Image (cartoon, rainbow, N blue to C red; front, side):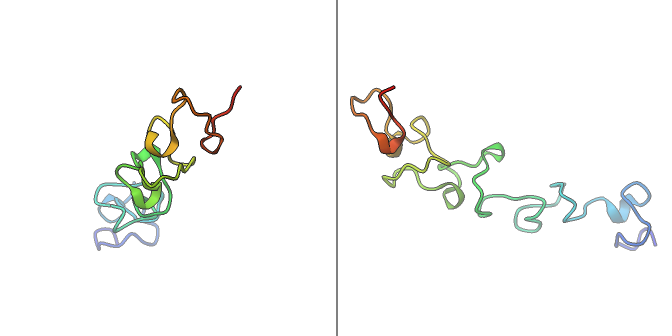
Length: 104
């Protein structure tokens, strides 16, 4: 029954927006959904994925993206631009192969 607070039966977002407007688990992060109450739709810091498209970085989500300044360059989340203290930088006079530099 549309209006009972449950999206079920033949109700859809179109036919009964009162019940079906926000559905956790539909793949869309919608109003009222957050990483804490609907992580499947709204992944965020703490989901073990460093998601740059959502603004996560070594500076604001160390849980997912590593820690800049730990003396380890994690090439999945850090580079010489974002974290020169871990990843060095080309032009410092040292060819650091472990940091992805080469003589080519």
